[in-house]
Image 1: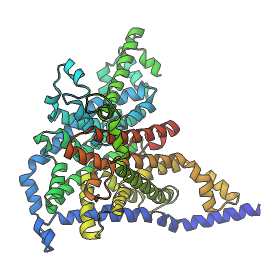
Image 2 (image 1 turned 90 degrees about the horizontal axis):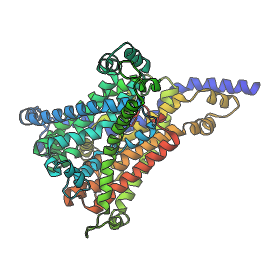
Image 3 (image 1 turned 60 degrees about the vertical axis):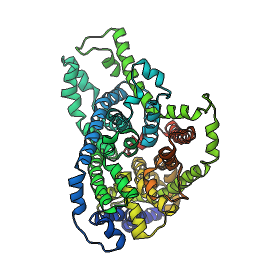
Image 4 (image 1 turned 30 degrees about the vertical axis):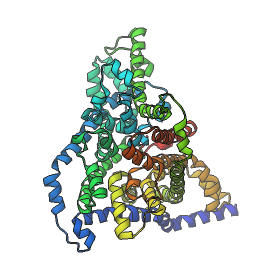
Length: 292
Length: 278
């Protein structure tokens, strides 16, 4: 009994000391975040106010000229980026919702499906190259494509295939978010609506859609955020119009032309957009079935 | 319940078994078409890697895996393992603090730690390249690469451990303490083994991301730190999609998939909730 009492007292003493030790537990993580995330992103914003020659010769004066240049010269690039990201996310929603519904309601081999769904998540790099090879005249699917009267090379570098590749990459994000929302919708609601004579589209618009709205929004924003920053898909797939997007301009300006000021400005706008969208998605995901 | 739904049509009447079978077949077909599309790039890459110059099929391209590409693969494994170890050392105490203690501004702190996860790769790569070169004066070595990987994947290790720790009742810890075990012993002998699945989920996510990461690497890697994924990208940009490059890409995907498969087989998807994978 005395041993137990001593242990409980020791435990109580530990509890009192935990306020300080809990802070120390997070120090390493915070240090890493500050050094390799916050400082670089802050530095990025500072440098976005400089121009090329200023940056290299040390006489760093600050102005809004890069922001003006982006607005005046690269507005079409912003529009292309937003258009492609929006369309790819819409494609994800249209095809991802039925997929998530069937997966949650009808399929028993969900773990297998989730395992196979990780293929696109290995990265857009392999996805882009693999799909590129499919469309070549001597590709492994050439016979199948010609059977359906499809000319693979005509699809290559088209906007449709760019969207398709982008949509495949982010498809799992939509399915995961919508699936998490549908898990929390009791099938009894659908059954009740059906028994009361509701048509399928009425069940979808009046029951399922409102109840899974948070998952749809979370999935859409997450897909949109990732599609804004997708890099390799467009460089391998897109024709010239599809390559006028933020991520590729960022790489070209930053790594080949060394216009760091302008590249910084690009990075600022692209990064802020993604963090805002995916941040909202993260909050909604937590609400519907994620980390509580 | 699902059986009832599956066997009635939309007007509430019982559907015929044949119609029900057809609907079920269409539903499963829809799932498998998409799964086929997901796996298609891997399948075509593998087929391309097996093609030989004389028009037949051979494993000739895979000789490069143990030859020219061996160094790149080793670099990939090396940075992945080091990153996983650092992530573990950082994440386990941090997750413990987040779940077991009241930290002021917990949500803000967690969001700050997660910030890098939501930063586009090109943005992160370029910002780190500039910061390393002009602010930190770090040369393009393994240190800078690992720093970037740790900050990019640390939240992926943290979240599954938090999920696992929240599922772990405190009674185990309290029972061990009551029986005289010290804090370190309680953690190492009681809590750590029970956190195994959560830690494994973190290792899985970190592995999948780092092993296949090329975009941040493209900005900050030096000549001696070219990873296998970056080599695939560079080769494809300069020499086209050769069978040897396809062999490297197929190997990378196969290794990643086997790791995922093993994890799902042993632990399922439970501990991946809240992460971006599930």
